[in-house]
Image (cartoon, rainbow, N blue to C red; front, top):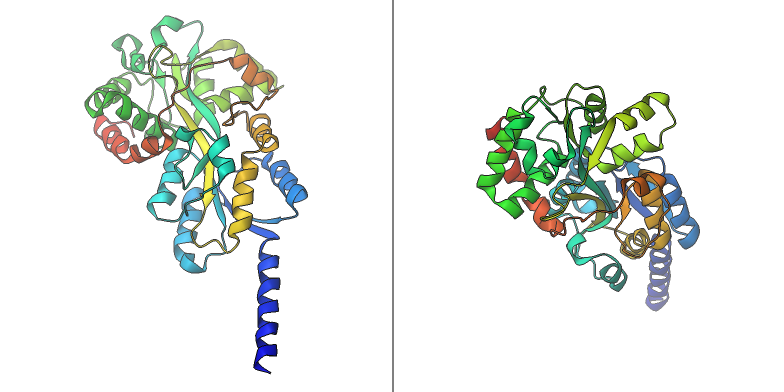
Length: 336
């Protein structure tokens, strides 16, 4: 009788394990409508249903902390290396040993616990009537006194800028990065405000001469059919900074499997799927980002118009870990 009971329990456990492999609980801080196709294709291909919760990064991280070992989440994905580093600092990610991910994602775009699945570049946008391209070939030149009153940028505390600051610290050291930040602040056309698209439009309108922006904001405007957006694109030029030195700074969208994931097999399958050719093309076409898998071919007119460039190959883990130091430097420089 006891043996029969054990068989029943074992059978139930087997059914539970099977059920677990048919679903995935995803916590996502990506808020792009085009990701819907990405998820639907995974469900169709694998038969694994995605249960998705979307919120801002801080809210999701707080939720994960509160849920603790009882969290139903399997995978956490977000944008920006500094945000992924926050999850890593909370010891949320599990190590993932996947031959697929190891082979397809470049070593500098993975840490072993979280992985980049797409990249975007931090470019310099300029007003073609006010600024000469040779004035702004590097990030460092944005601190040149010749650009006094010409620079527009969003808040220094924003992760996009903190990631750039962290990369500069890694390449140039803290002292040079602080000198650069002070020079940049001295060149502000106005106090930092708004997002990257606001900076681009301010440049086009002549409110400032140059601005920093993530590349996909420029690409969105290029792909827009709105007359006002077309006027913006006509008025601006785009520079790939630091092509003769360490390359243009890139940031990422990425994610990892959580240590408490109840569906670990499905989680690894999902991460591997994000490195597949189909998923990589969704990233590129859907949000104007670049695939991390080198041989994936995409057809995106905006990315083609922006053209090729030399990207910084600094290990993404180093970039993310320097954000706290970058914030302190920016605070001292008055970039708030």
